[in-house]
Length: 121
Image (cartoon, rainbow, N blue to C red):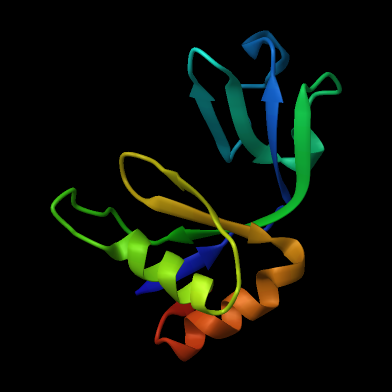
């Protein structure tokens, strides 16, 4: 399976109002619940007024469109990285999954994935 490394550094943060977000930026992941508005975007695009913020993430995208009947793709990657003591932050879209790791663990994540037979571009 092939993964593509996202080139930009990413941040995970909470905001009070979606009006502060540039909705044209990519990548951009927004989760809205009754408790919070969480956002993942490039660090350079984070608005000044956040409630909480964590910088220093790098991301991988699973290439291709994943059929909903496929089982365990994200779980296998999460388990593999957990075995290497690497925490993840996962985001799923309709087409695929994205796996974020802290930037200081990025090289170790690439090594673990490649040793397990994944291709990281």
